[in-house]
Amino acid sequence: MFARLNKLPLLGKVLIAIALGILCSFFFPDFLNRVFVTLNGIFGNFLGFTIPLIIVGLVAPGIAELGNGAGKLLAITAAIAYGSTLFAGFFSYFACDLSYPLVLNSQSSLAQSVAHAEKILPYFSVDMPPLFSVTTALVFAFVLGLGLCAIQGDKLKNGLLEFRELVNKVISGVIIPLLPLYIFGIFLQIGAEGQAGAIMKLFIKVIAVIFVLHVSLLLIQFVLAGAIVKRNPFKLLVTMLPAYVTALGTQSSAATIPVTLKQAIKNGVDEKLAGFVVPLCATIHLAGSTLKIVACAFAILWMQGMPHGLDIFAGFICMLGITMVAAPGVPGGAIMAALGLLSSMLGFNEDLQGLMIALYIAMDTFGTACNVTGDGAIALVVDKIYRKR
Image 1 (cartoon, rainbow, N blue to C red):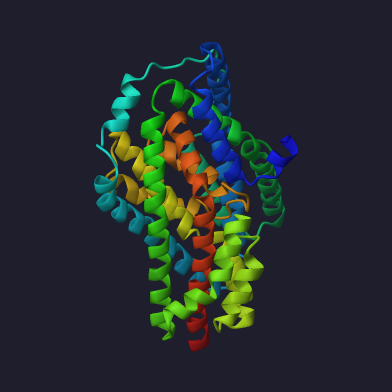
Image 2: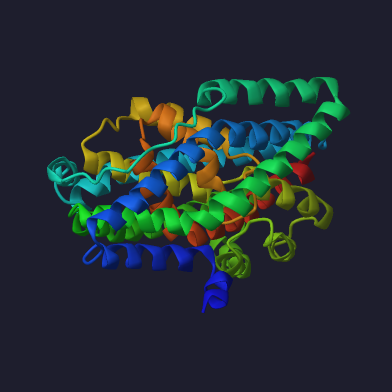
């Protein structure tokens, strides 16, 4: 039985963890609830310790690697990818600002539920202060990455690449395997404190909104690409659907590269150009993930009655598009890279970060599929620019 569970994708494990957590909250004794709350506190502190390291380990080498590309073509592709990511983030924000008041319950409902809940306290806690703050980590990563682009420092770059491998091992070997247990503990606590109903209603409605936004974003991307290359956008989108379906199964942009590459060439993109643009966009173009993170974060802040204005989200969206560069090709990698910004810029505490992880992973396959399908639209635009040059 345990062998079968290990073979399940992360999404399946998370869904089982949510269901078991709520179910067990009805009959677990208080002492057992406190055991899991204690374990969650330790894991949450460990997560807080690793966040700055994750940022440095992913962002710095990701930026450094961009300096070894094909000059202007690299800059054009990176600019279009970042612009697409920014558009997805702001599109998500304004769409949520309009739709959530109509779809979700009263803005203060979840906040009232949390306020009236009888809190379950851990037996003890283990402090794990991070080596430096999230802001310091971001600035340090930018300085390292951009500096290596300028000086071509191979030794330091190789060291950063090895550090990225270490960070990826920590994510894929420690954090991701423990996430189902962490999420089980979160929903066990939510159920025991009487908040399960409000949380699950939030999840179902937000997931429905995000799915509609993903479809809308892909239509917008291919309508724009079709207008630029003067071709039928719907035929172009249909050609990219095998990449979308493959990403649903693999949950990895990197693993879907061969299919994305093949379908982009079918759409008429130059083969050599596609071989450059598609792998690059699999690393730097995260429009679907950005849309999803913004929508999930907005929902949690809105339902908690916390500030969620454009003045807060504008900077968050701009930084998010950079921070997720070279996020590891494992399920949930983008949200791991974004946790630092969620805490430092939006004020997410450990409990809200846990909810964010669960809500994000529940839609992880659709975000990845949106990312890779959008790569096909970018390849078409870059191919048009390339042919003109």
